[in-house]
Length: 452
Image (cartoon, rainbow, N blue to C red; front, side, top):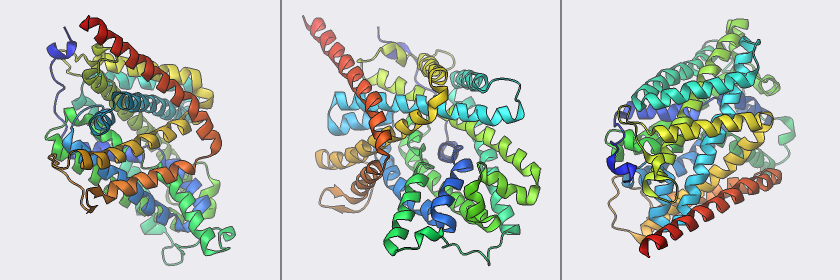
């Protein structure tokens, strides 16, 4: 008998506040602690504009997720959206497998980032050991239950936000706000208006990846109270809150040290904090970065296991046993073990070149974003009278304008990628396509054998 018939449902315990904190933690992650220096090198003091534009870009796709999540509040969100909208089992399976790949590589990447921070404080052990132990501990927490995992996530997110609030408060109290030109850019930019616009666009594309992660809020829908209302609100509020924090951090840091000094540092926020706290500022920001990386790994392991669970529950192309729910913990325990095992393997195999794998996974998520925006558009034409608890405004006929803009923006970002990254992405993408073809063929053969 199918395990999904006898297993209990996932436990619904996530509130709106917890879902918002989950989203904030997903978006903030650890990227802002290092990314802001690279953005400053491109856009100078005007980098706050890049954060604002990137927020608009992320919001367009975030709103598409909000509408779809109100209609289909399911785990394996992207898989369900594409299957319902495009009517293609193969495309849906491809999107599902791609999101699993992204969750695994993202968790592995950030776990290695965690180890690099921790080795500064505890240099006596190899960094890879810290990364592996982190995944093991957080996978056990993921198994224990969504309530326990979300509680830890909420605490870590508040700690993570507090670190950025420290930077903002230092900037407000000690920064040279009146003497700082917030439109100043590197001198090489002032060649023409087109060059300035291109520079802002370039830095905006970099900042866009600081918002990566918001889409995973949709994957805890089956463990959320009133998901058709909670998930859309959590998506919107989390993007809004993080945008305010990002812009205030950008303004505060350049008022403290200026874009030139930020761009030269490997720990830009630590440099900004040291202006008020001295060497203690560097230690404090290092500890906060440990909280941030731990939080990100936990959320990627949660979302990855829920994606696997959701696909196994709805599509027998992959083993339905992966949809089994633990009788007492009410968590997808086999999917949790699956995601843990592959994350550990990725750390071991690619620890020396994990940044390359991370770039490929970012390109992959843009493919997913494009298909999600396309799903909103397609559903508006295929099922115009479908009940949508959250419905996006602004349409021309049946064409929704915001998802259309989201699709165009996603394509624009994709064509800006370094050709070497795009070329490298072909290998895992083709591998996923071949895997999906094999799984689809196996499913068809099983149905034929059952019929005859």
